[in-house]
Length: 214
Image (cartoon, rainbow, N blue to C red; front, side):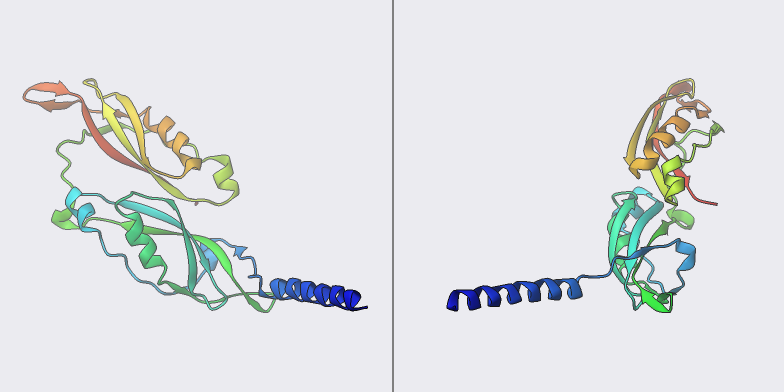
């Protein structure tokens, strides 16, 4: 009799644990387009000193989750320059949105945000070692990225030969969905040969390829 009572007690405890876990389980966020989110509070990122000194600028794309109160509760880096990523994430974590109401109830939501780092005035990087672009081929927007409404920026390290042709391309940072498309496009770009001391030379520099939904 005691054994049966113990079994019943254990069963009730187990069922209670399952019930508590089910109640406590967080609601899955709803994926929405960024345009549906109304930004109420935006904290601008602090430009990293190392990036300023190196003349680095670009975009950082972040996947954000906002709770039912509109506050950003979680972030995931999608793409961006290593020197800029941490500053962008730190800023976005402080952003606040108007709660998104679906079927009369506030829902946690998942969306992407883009943080831009642009150098101003005399802080802009010198372009004397970057050849003039003569021919630019736009990249093809990856089908999977279009389907999932993903935007990104890919930063590439490019080397041109003495004829101004792109001879080498390496990804510095970027979303896996976009890297190949960016590389294939940039390989077709053509530059004016860079002259130094009266001779054409090879040169290595960075380029930024943006993928934005229209």
